[in-house]
Length: 401
Image (tube, rainbow, N blue to C red; front, side, top):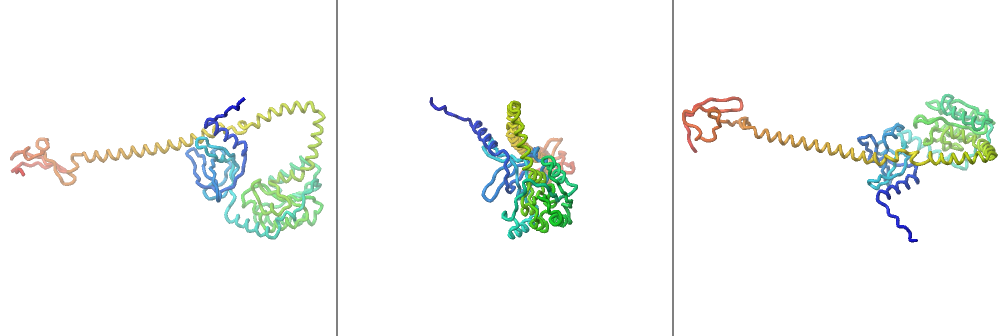
């Protein structure tokens, strides 16, 4: 049989390209500089993301702006989490942004970069000097605030995943001027007095660059580097990096991730036992898997997870039409005002009494305008209309020129 010829309409081809892009790049992270920032009439944000050589269009819909806590403007360096898709009407690919974070924050960022370069030059970041984290620790030390969410997350996760692990908490300030000294002293004292600890977690929950600054101080970095106990830096959310992250033997994205790391091998061992246990009831498991597979396909389908995919193009099109409509209304209004002003000017020029304001007079006899000397005779009573009144006079003589 001859191969069937596949022919697409333009719309079908654009939809195929969009589906390929969305499935291939569902949740990508991109760093670039904001350029051409603008906010539409419906409060959607549009801008370009660029570097030295390339540029890509971006859209941040109104409903995804709630988590943004900084001012987006031209010239700032940002990191975005987005989907790569196309705008069908223009056959243009773009990023639909789901989250955006600033990467630079003034003078503190400069201090951060300077200290980072200094310590890196001294070799404190070298992978060769970093030690492996024990797979099955019996004692875990935690240097953090006693009142923050981090200590609660660490304790609850370890106790849930590996209840045999002993946790020793050394409470310190994690923010403010004294925080750096308390953190550094805690690391030193634990090494001197609690050397039986297998691994040391140093960190706190997320925050701004200023909030996390204690973990960017040189005294803290050197205390971590000098620790004989393997250290895990667990400062902030996934997108936050500190000097402590680079010096520590291991960097965990969050305190929760650090707790999972130290309990991972024990947890995996328990999971293996659970898996073997499940195999003993194979029949029930197979039935469960079939049901779960159908359910999983449904809940993981693209349209279920991303319902706005059905209307994003419509929203972009409506936004574009709404903007054009506003422009047309403004133009029509300006044209109407200009027409009114022209008509008003012409109407003023048609005023028969306008010449009297320039010193001219209108002559009339019995309410009839005199246009020629032939319209009057000697002795006729004539009214002379001026801008501010009427003069009544009698013709004594007339002369034809």
